[in-house]
Image 1: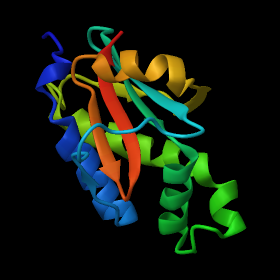
Image 2: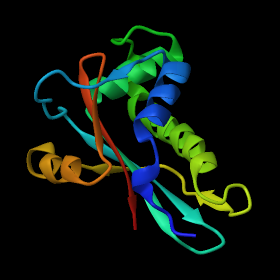
Image 3: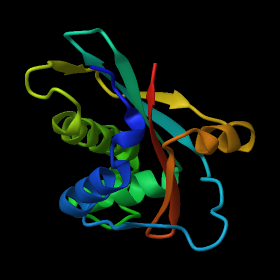
Image 4: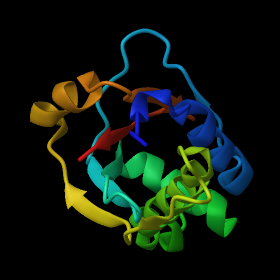
Length: 156
């Protein structure tokens, strides 16, 4: 069994997760999307336990998206201090749910076992890394309530 990450409908899975958990709707961006401000990378690894094949689900978003996401999940205003404090924790949780939603779409599921890592947060320089990140095969770039977000699933 060979994993082909290009066959995964990442847009549909990510959209479903955002719409059902945070009441946010990702849409294709109008025109050339801008780069996210104060961007962070959130990544989670998925490993096939039967073959050891690995892939990584990665999201790049700015602080504005993270705060809007947290406020929607918490049911608060975007300028609420709780939303600011929980901003990137909320993003990690959405990535956890997205990865968990991808697994049933992978080849061989459920016979082929899959494991997920804990979502991790990393630095991301949108000025130097954005173009390369978004040019990767299978990367989707969406507009979520005025915030640019990129998500990709890649083999490791």
